[in-house]
Image (cartoon, rainbow, N blue to C red; front, side, top):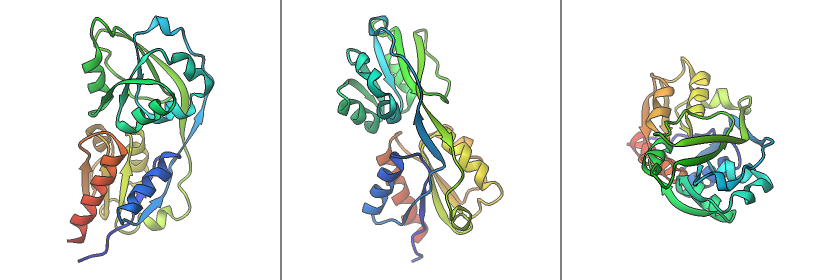
Length: 229
């Protein structure tokens, strides 16, 4: 049986440390290799009476929104993934729905005569979503900016490792930094979109069955078992 390869966690903090801890608890060699840094940006909360629902697609929106988030506490929250939902509940928000299949699937399920006005508290860089006839207002409260790879990145990807892509942007950044060097690298992607953006040439690609960190860790554990056989 071969040795389990290192697992590189590329997401921004504080999520990076949480994922590393989960992986280590599962017995894997987890390495913190953040390729992004999340920072708050200025924003102003609109009148919640103008909206029916608050859409949250990342826990970073809750962590970095600041005091303005309290002004939206009257809105029911539709959150993508349990991590985002837990962050919202911890901030005193009312989580009505926790989606398990990504942001677009959540919008597909939420649009109705009762949810025609959606406020999306999100990052500055985000995917396009089809509002399905509803009015969707995207309001940025944070940014996730790329940073230089940490020391040791080049040495690590020169050997067989598993990389985690927690978002489409993460997959794009990983792809750019591994171009021409993927033959010994495996990827765990949080969605089919992220997997597609990561490109071709990987030793193996696994897509999680739901868009959250627990599923990413489970997929990494399963992939390590396959590699060790």
